[in-house]
Length: 392
Image (cartoon, rainbow, N blue to C red; front, side, top):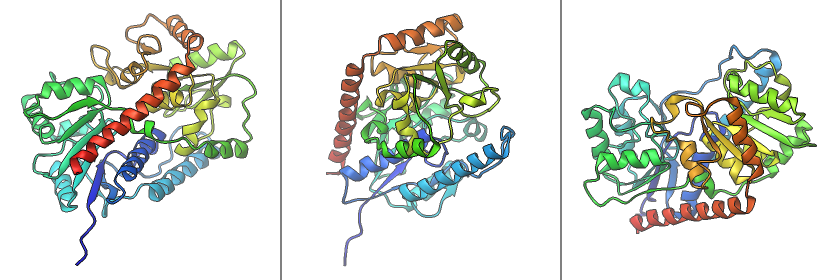
C-alpha cells in the first residue's frame, strides 16, 4: 500500500486584501515548497474573519467603486490561484475550535508566521481567548515560528493567565524565529523552559525575486510614465500629516503619488495612484525617488527596490512605550533606525520630519542596501535549513 505524503501546514494571515499580507503568505509558501519538495504544503485554512466586498463611504464616485470591486476580485483570484489551502475553511476566534481543526489535518510540521500573528487583538481579550497562532502543547507535531511578530504586545500588562498560556505555548515549539526586537523580548520574558533556539529572522518577502513584468504591464495599460522624480506617500490619506507632505512637495514642484489606504478624505485626488495587484505593487517602488510610509512591507519593498524610505510611526498602539515597533526593527537591520525612522510622539513637529526625509534622500547608500538585502536573503535561507534539520 502506498504511503501518504507528509504534510506541512503554514499558519498565517492570508485572506486580507493588502499587498503585504498576500506577499508574506505567498513568499512563505514558495520558500517552503522550494526546500521541501517532497512534502504536501498548504496554508492552514483558519480565518479570523470573512472577506466580503462592501461599498465604502469613501467611494465618492462610480469609478472609485468599480476600481475597488475590481481590486477585490483580483485579490480573490490570486489567493485562489497561488495560495493552496487545507479543506473546509474555519472562521472563528474560538481557540478550541481552531485547535480541533488543526489536529484533524495531521501535519508533520506547522510553520507559524509571518506577520503580526502573535498579537492579541481586542476581540481575543474580550473573549478571554489566546490567538490560535500561539499553538497549544497538545498539538504534538514539529512546530516552528518563522518571522512571527507580536506587534507592540509586551509582557508586563498581561495578566498571569495570559502569561502562562503564552509561556506554555512557546515552550512547546521546536524552533522560534521572530521578526522584530519587541517580539524577541516578549519571548524571552515568557521564559524558555528548555533549549529552544530563538532568533530574529528576516521577513519571508526577502526570499522572493520581484517579477517586474507585472508592474511594467500595469504602467503601460494605465499609460503612466515617471518623467520626473516622484515621491510616494504610503499613509492614510485622511491623516493630516499625509496632506501636509503632499502640499509641501507639490509646492516645491516635486511630483507626488499617494499609495494610501483607508479614509479617502484627501482633496488631492489627482495624485492618488490607481489600485494595483500585490504582484504589481511589489515592483512599483523602484520608480520612486523616496517613499514615506507607516507600512512594514512598504518599507521592505522600498528597500528591496533600492529606494530611500522613511518609516513613520504615528499611532501609539503600533509601538511600545520604549519606542520599539516593527518598522523600527526592520530599519535596524539596515542600521537606519536612528536616521530613517520617525516616532511622532518623540519628534518636535513637521519641520523635523522634513529634516529626516531630506537626510534620507541625501545620504542613501544604494550599494550598502543592495549588499545588506542579499545578506538578509541568505539569513532567511539559513533559517530554512535549520527547519530542514528538524525534519531529517
